[in-house]
Amino acid sequence: MDTTTNTAISKVTDRYVYIEDVDMRFVTKKGVFEALKDINLSIKQGEFISLIGHSGCGKSTLLNLIAGLLEPSEGHLFCAGREIAAPGPERAVVFQNHSLLPWLTCAENVQLAVERVFGSESSVQQQLRTVAALELVGLSHAMDKRPNEISGGMKQRVGIARALAMEPKVLLLDEPFGALDALTRAGLQDELMKIMAKSGATAVMVTHDVDEAVLLSDRIVMMTNGPSAGIGEILDVNLARPRARLALAEDKDYNHLRSEVLRFLYERHAKKVA
Amino acid sequence: MSAISLEKESLKSIKQVASHEDATSNVIAANDESAQLEIDSSAAKIKAAKKKKMSIAVNHRNNKTYAFFKVVLPPMFGILLFLGIWTLISHQNPVLPGPVSTWKSAVELFAHPFYINTMDDQGIGWNILASLKRVALGFGLAALVGIPLGFMIGRYEFMSRMCAPVIGLLRPVSPLAWLPLGLLVLKAAGPAAIWVIFVSSIWPMVINTAVGVSKVPEDYMNVAKVLNLSEWKIITKISFPYVMPYMMTGVRLSIGIAWLVIVAAEMLNGGAGIGFWLWDEYNASNYEHIIIAIFVVGIIGLVLEQTLIAIAKRFSYE
Image 1 (cartoon, helix red, strand yellow):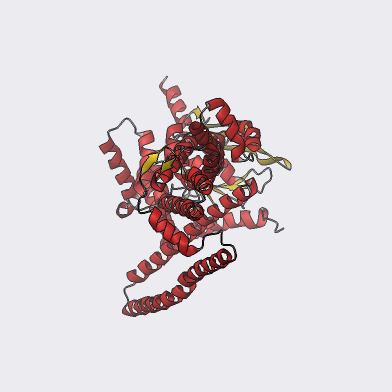
Image 2: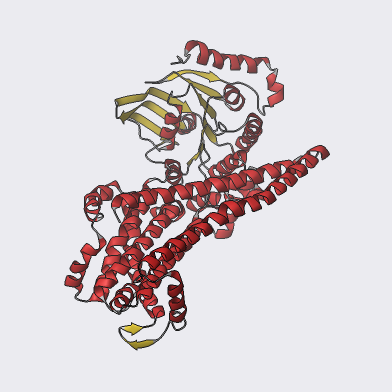
């Protein structure tokens, strides 16, 4: 009896996000386009997964499928043992272009998420949550600013705060730092690592930055080129946490992992330059 | 007013909004820059920044004299030229009052704008107010119906496809073509004029609102989906603020049309109003008053337009 419940629980935590035989096809003007084929992946609770691949390989599509923004043509996706049918606040998304509403202040943008998820709480409690989320990303001073009054890095941090404020089970990040300069990006990566260690949430991140993938992930899912893209290889990143950027730069394992990813991307699945 | 020129007008105003946004973002970029400069603590950098600011100030002063020649002078020249041509024509053709006699007559007229002798003999102030009231009623009703309709058309493709043929058919109809129908059904001149304004000024609001709603970026709608926002929240927090500038453009075009139509409708209808007054003064051979009426209509139209542009600027968020 005990053992069966234990295995059932470990099954749910081992397959916290579970993708089963997923195909994704789009109907376009030129006909049917198959973006993803035979995707199978299970993600453990608390794990940080990166999806990496050349542009157009469908990694964002896969993320949108987990988010529930798209429905798969074939197969099923599950989160915490339940099938993903629609988007929901338990799977918060940090969008590539931050997607803050420009007519709301930073605090109001976060508030929008808070009041939806914690609507039953008092307004004071909700405000505290908003403040706490912005504090977490170091933006309590910019609460009353509008998105166009702050820098790109700050906007992305508000986007992260908005996602975290919902206390999601899974955090989905779609090239969260892609539009930022290298220094800002590094700073935010470090912050994200700390936040993820603190919250213990499961995360799936789409990236095309090899260093970012190795630095942040527990596993790197490397995708083959589209159309009909699939999972080419999954790389375990067994680097101890907390990880320090500078120390890792000279670490043998780190550099080995890095070159593994590079080899996959540029030797075995090099993108033909058309 | 043809459909094509309307479309051009609406394009132009969208461009105006866009260029306004560009300008503000430039200002913001400039602010960012100066903020960045302030953060740098090295003395040399501060010096350089001060120099830069000074040179900007100098340029600014030069710009002022330059602006006088470039911005103030040409319109003044245009007005003088207009008055000159007018004088010339009125000399050739004595029936047409010249600027001087029109001015004198206007001073007399506006000395007592609010008197009432009979229903058909009222001060110009009352006539203007009567016209504005009609426009406000007709336009207000059009906004009340047109804006929600535009929202629905923009939000639901079914509605869009459903309404497209009817709107396409009715929009190009000349405003005065609706007057007999109004008289027939409403059986009174006043409501018929309001009906004409309603039916001819509703389209820009419907169309601009619908275009705005259908252009709400996919990203914002994805945010709404992920946050699982209610339809009400989507409208109040996302669609409405985003659509506001489009809607204001529609409102501006609609008011313009309403004001264009009022004069013609009142001429045919009688009663009080600036259009009726114009026609009445023509029949009474007060030719100066015809020209005054034209100027009054023009100036009020200009004021309405500028007011709405000012309001629209307040609602643009970029």
